[in-house]
Length: 407
Image 1 (spheres, rainbow, N blue to C red):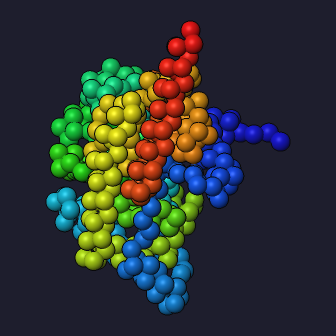
Image 2: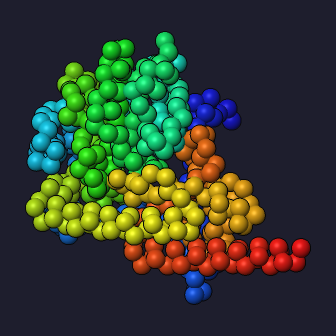
Image 3: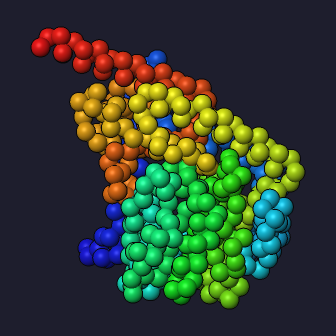
């Protein structure tokens, strides 16, 4: 069977390959005193709050399960618009909001609407791998621009200028970012958008972790810049609705009918039950619960990052959002006599029964030195994971000291 070149361009999602290996080992150790702790997948351990679950049940009982229009329920678009106004003091008209089958569908729709074959899209290295594959699936090319800790692992206006060519169509950013949990400073984001706009390009920004910001200096939507910024968002992370597959896209008004036409043909509409359930996300009681959970995520971050640093798993930039720690494992790996984050991740899985994600997925700019920890798990799991890593480090030190004495 002949496989399309488009499909062949898509690399494996190594996060999931590691997850499969972790799952297999987890089954072997499930009944031991050290079952697997999963710090590899970015999925909140919280589920949809009560009002959301009740709204879904009501929709099913009422038979509200048929197709909606491709752009989503008008009432849900209005609720999202009101959320921007109340939380960020930004006016985003409901008519510019398209409800999608998750942020993945939003990214696919945006890329198909705006990218021609051969167009190049600038992205930071490191960055979330699936985002560049959406560009590739639209016959574009993702150009990864190496970033540094000093730049918060984000693109800068100067780097966008330097990387821009005749083939460049625009930028695809993420703030806060996966895997680093870092955001772009609002002033720098404005400068990037100005550079892109002056060249007739597009600014796409993945804001799916925006609700999970912990620093007011960064917790602002790019939609405050102007109406030409295109934002991708989701009910998965802040709203804890991962498996409900619901997101949204904010586009310039002229682009709405284009995106609608694509959505009609590719998806018909997002899940109707999920849309009715999401209406309850914006109730006062639900928002209060989400804010309580956001505080819990922050508390996990505040405890976990210093613990990693103390173990020699240096996190060069404190994440200001999301629930990730991007840690340099070089020193710890050397203790174990191994090189690179790929082998380190598997060694950690085998020795400590802690599943983490190697940097391989996220680019090529020194990503072989880094691993990503997810702090979306409970504090109890994070504490147990640190204790196991500490034991692992101590055992390595003792082995190395014995080796030196023997010499």
